[in-house]
Length: 411
Ligand code: ADP
Ligand code: ASP
Ligand code: MG
Image 1 (cartoon, protein in one colour):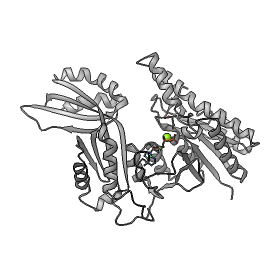
Image 2: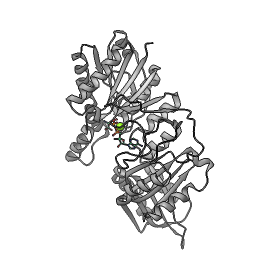
Image 3: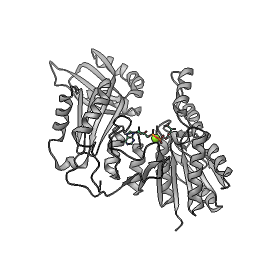
Image 4: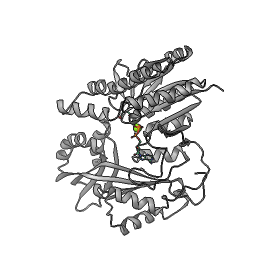
């Protein structure tokens, strides 16, 4: 039966001409088997990082609008080249930017959300029998400017398009065979997970598992889009991210996520009175700086310390905002430690198994890893550790919960 298929290829899958030709072969095969195909692509290789680096050489303070204008070019390179490669194979294809594809987003530059998708042009091109290739990671804001959707945003483009087009299949092709129990680059023993729930994938992605962008999973969950994460280089089945996953009773922890790029900010000796926390975190929230863990120490002679973590990339912005707040509050000093990393364990099994956090702390202690900050939720325990200890902590956590053994069936 003919299906409508969304296929998304990440940067490593389109990093050079040969890889683009490989993608073209896969897409062409799908089209030739009678399916209607919409392809989403990322910028080639490290192009987005390279563009950011170039901007940093020009200015410390680029306008969000121009940054988006710059970053959006990476995906446009991929769509045009892929379209040429597919046409070269005798299959008609057409490339579309996000705006041309009818993807509308809000005005928050570099971190926009998709607000609406009007797929008239996509459907028109599909009707002509063409493969439609859409630039990931970009949309049009209400001022008719391009905005980008945050790092890894092509995943979001793909899942949101699959929802809007009511696609039968949404496939995310990447450089690993699927979602693993942890990053296989750090722990080679990591096991591929056959099926994982939106809920667990959302926590893993939010905690730093780079393989899927967190917001794409939110959209998948909201619109019930099953997402198949698989390798661009093999035909093997990957991981199905879906609503319901039958689970083995004894699986408590499903995966370990690692975020190596965290920073810890501490405000020392600030007054212990109502409104102080709001004063500190209000401006950060207004400017869209995501604060993750927060720890407030026990007050001593009317004074307190507050520590919190942000993504390392947000440190400069956070410090700028805190400067005036800190002096108004007469904080003794503001200290930044940008050499910290976050290691998190995730699993819905934690709900019914007490002692999981204690097990993690014991394993890290036995491995000589010091924990700096801790946060827990119903299905996650996260620890901040020294950056240098990060990979070791991931390996310890992964082993402690038996994740280096083949995954039980049904998971
Ligand atoms: P793409 O360019 O295809 O979007 P990404 O680099 O964004 O690919 O994501 C794939 C990478 O995510 C893998 O190469 C892997 O190192 C990393 N990764 C982190 N955590 C996981 C995990 N739990 N399972 C699989 N890959 C992971
Ligand atoms: N090219 C963008 C990035 O590197 C979007 C993506 O790859 O999904 O973040
Ligand atoms: Mg990605």
